Length: 530
Image (cartoon, rainbow, N blue to C red; front, top):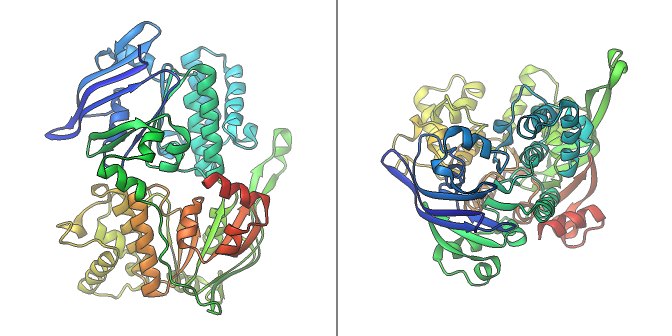
């Protein structure tokens, strides 16, 4: 008897059918990857397996072989379905910040699962929560267990979610993009952890992903979805060696390509830091916390130079200090020593800082949470003009917004009523284009790109990288690129800087650092990305 059988699964929202005739089989101890672009139906398929596709009309059968025999999940009454969730079938969601409760520490949330589902005593549950966080590779698990979700990095939050899902040792783990927010080395650690737990407990894994390198290294079988239909299935070896469907072939061919223009070696610097340090206050444990706080050094003695028209790629694991360094460069994070943008230091005065902020803009990692859901596209993209050019007439502002959107490939012809639409009406890649337009509309000299493609599938990521390369060539922009994806570094960067534990361990031209790395840590990053 198979652990999971999905037979003729159909899912519709109103008159719109989003999944049609899906058939899947998953054996115990097997790892099945469900692959496809955003909008292909893979996530809603996974949600329907646990009755979590709210508002959907679901038909077909989802047969799960539990301890009491085979049951049709779609026919279970609410109480039995609630008992199944988390204990027999667990799920790791894609965005941990929305899945974790911001009012409780991560340790309390993991312990709650153990208490409710396994009947573990409160003290023992907290001890097991610490052990689970340690298993997922989070440093200082005792301290992180007492942290709230917003106090963890994106990768650490995702690992906490995985620890919570594995707390009850489920028979089936549904992992919806579980490594999207993780760097390459931690991604491999998580895959190794899931493999070890699978072998130990006989657990099966249904992996929802767009990362084909991850599929190649992790899965036993692959099912490819396009527009709600499974177009191809097979073993990993068969599918990667000889894909039959044109859509599968296109996915496999979608890798970052390099079309950047060679940088001018003696171009003037636009961003410089000297001995940059960033410290955070952290509470002391026990009674000593009454008398003061300790400090945690997030970035120490960081020297970098970004020149006009160049891309400086900053690589490193989650928690290495990459994003903290970028926030200091943006003037959004208190720091020690020196940061200069276009020769000017932050803190020269309100007006001077506002003028400088126009010259350096940012594109964030998650294009959904970085765009206000209550603002239209016109309001989002034009917001910078209202700050930096408040006297600009409404008609001129609207024209500038339209031009900025055209520059990133969004037009009124493609999307009727474009300016009055809201972010939720666009795909992830389209939302990221809106975020780029918002940054470009004030005509900056520098863009800070914080993981600009990590939340996107492979084809959308390739399109965004091509767009960024074109804009750099046309506008002479300088990019400070924060990423854990070595493929993106190879496609975009002229120079590379590698960070570990808040320190710069290696930097230099792209070919020097990636083709002949001097540090063992850099070699580890490169090996994990292959």
